[in-house]
Length: 134
Image (tube, rainbow, N blue to C red; front, side, top):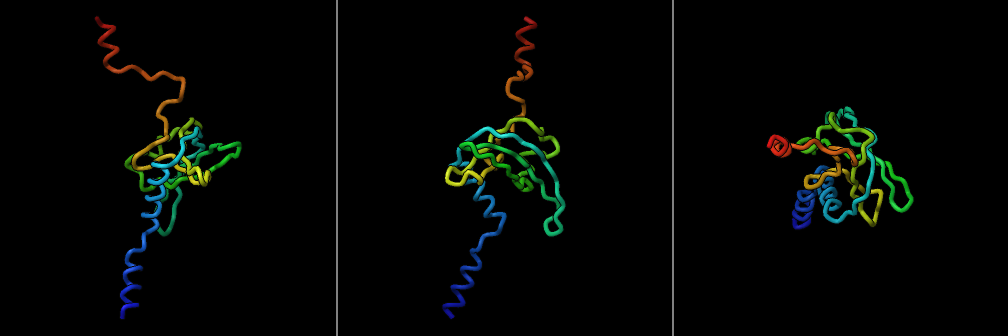
């Protein structure tokens, strides 16, 4: 009877793939190193089991080794719209220093997506209009 109870307890505490992925993103977000990368594609792929899956495909280099990776951002829809991702623009990538192939571009608490390419000035908001009117 004790063996059955222990088996039930262990099975009950087993984490779902979504929970494991969330923990991976959180670990890399907290402990990862940041490096420059490039978003090379954003796709929505149909998956019969889970419905549509949104993927962000990116490239980055660590210590002379090039990596091309994809991140499932389906559960991060509230943070990023895949249809407005700018392809070919620089982004920041966080990677695990112990395993540079393990990386993210976005998580619940961090985003490496850049809204504006580096070197192109952002338009000034209302404050600059008020100063020029004086």
